[in-house]
Image (cartoon, rainbow, N blue to C red; front, side):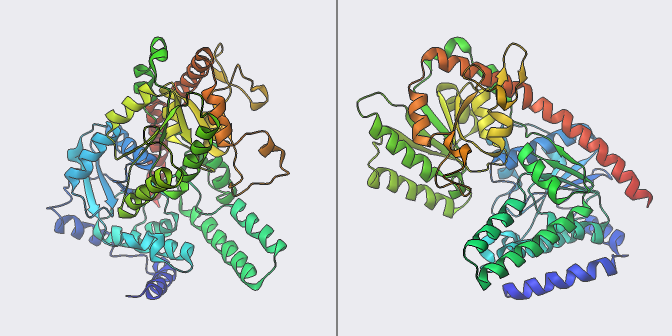
Length: 505
């Protein structure tokens, strides 16, 4: 079936579902439970359905998913978890093994079941060559329908960010919806950027694009009406979602970052034994800006040719053949084009969590170059493990993680009180940033990535230890798994209230 036909089908469903509102729903659920006894096991009457089509990706979003699953199982000892995933090339045993390997999470996996979705391609941007945003939104509606036709849970939890399926969940199944949003699908910043571009170079194409994005924003605002409990992962994301879903109470719940384990493994007395080495932990995808890091590292090496410079290790998971090809492209560019010595730069793919902890324990610096990283779990891991973070001055790293810290009072300080004695890391800006303005004062306050590589490399041992200890204190106070567990329990309490209210209607 062609892409356009699927769009038409989804559009029809958008208007038909509220009308038909499925008197057959209860029968559908009973039948599905009966038909799938070999798959979904009926342990209880309460099923929490986690919609996460890429549950095996191994990134920060998946860390949130699996910690939420673990805590939900503890919160409700009689419940079962259903994971809706499109990872059809992996078995449940393989997915579980990857969770343990990557995140070191243990739980009662006998109460975790998987519903495998055949049509995940509908939410893949590459499926929609034109009108990608609308295509993916329609695709998420269709994928949600597939999920509900395969199994209807009691509660719908979206931990990946497919909001256009929420009306479907309410209309088709009448379920309460809880969402954990990592990043807004569209924001006012994006629309404002298009408005500015259109003012500079007016055109019919630009006008149509602006209308398209504004209409899409209206749709995004509309689907927020179907959210019962809305959670975001950071201040930056929370501010954007509040401006879009104005009638929804938004909670900021920092992701679980396992800071307890990392702080425990980081000894102040062993700081001098750390290698002069920087790590970048990020999935191998273009938006993580590995090319920027490699170019900056090449520039940095050329500036310090006669001096000792830190080594660089790029660590990340690969989700597909496309990701693996991207890694090979980066290697070729770094070693063949830029002539970076192989002894200075190392690539590590799909490492176990134990391997990652080892790199964190023995390294001195941690890098995050993404522009407007909505949160940045890797940056928290850097701080908790005692690394000095070298990060982009935007979103999560700037507003939530690498913040001024008062060690005496053990509290975060306002940015106006930021000094060398309160800093927890170093920041950079780059001319390739989408919001770069040479006349903007904020850009002039920060050096380039190569600049802060040079600054970090020249820090004394005493300075490194002071920054490291402040960062660890901040991370352990704000981003522990225990802090997430308590916040998640409170959110489930609120969801219980919503469930009771919906059930009485």
